[in-house]
Length: 316
Image (cartoon, rainbow, N blue to C red; front, side):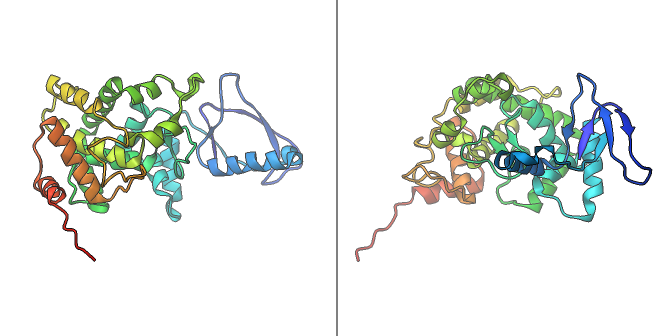
């Protein structure tokens, strides 16, 4: 399915009937946006690389003329209710749900995320994308709700209730938080200053191997701490207070490498492998909050106490 932002001049030819070939005129400044079918497009690219002779073969497409791309997405979501959609597409196309809408807005608004979120599938080892749409959504849920006793549908429900009619305010707060972190954190700032369209090289795969905050687990830790920072003050215009900015700056200058002492031995293993189990994320959030002087929840205190207990070693 393709989308054109303005009406196209179309000329049908051949015999009459329900289906006829046609040509259309694409204005110089117009382009066709792939609303659905990115995986088919990639499959065609790979097929043509292996079999160049199919380059002149025909492929049927549907073109929707609609200037409002959000409406195109919503129409596609509504039409697709007869069959299940991937979770990433639910977030991408269903703007009625507040959590999905905020995820879309933050993805397009936060400097670090622009053009760096994988809409479908996973982030490959050599990908220049940072996170999947669903990872961004889970991070946003932690920023908004911050309750580690919740998971899945329960987290989604509480997130919807928390956002409610204040979703625009929340969007501004979340973008402000991420942009403030990006401005101070060396690695995120380097990525944000070199967007994909600039053509400037950025070693995203290398950063992903070296730094925790370039992974889905690291994003959850960052957002879990961010919830406590955002809970301190709520400015009516969505901006951060000065003490919130100071805490974000402190957060951004921590050692986010996989060798960082705050996550060694549990969240990050000896070989640098990440095991983002729920309790590991909670412990990492608690340790960062301790570092920043933020109050801990009962669960976070319990996780720190458990981690500090000496491990019993039994002789064989």
